[in-house]
Amino acid sequence: MTDRQKIQRELEEKIAQGESTVEKLKAKMSEAGDDVSEETQKALQAAEGFLEKGKAKYDELANATDEEFDELWDKTKDNWNALSAGIEGGWDTLSDKVRSFFS
Image (cartoon, rainbow, N blue to C red; front, side, top):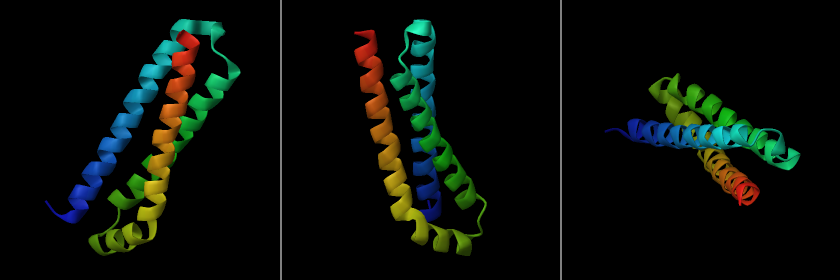
């Protein structure tokens, strides 16, 4: 497996994990109906925003030629790692808010 394939697979896994988490949380929030706080709804929207940014960056990398990919990855890997940390932090925050809501 090339470095590009490895990087893309890792990005795909992070995105899939994020999508799964968001869908599970949406289902729980849907069950709660009107009792879900505005703060929890905003936290979900923020997490979805991070996920969309991650998807857009992945698409840009996936559609690049090998040469473009290497150049793009060099320029964006720090940003991707920060975005990934933001997504994970968003999930943690959102999960905490949802857990506290349902406790």
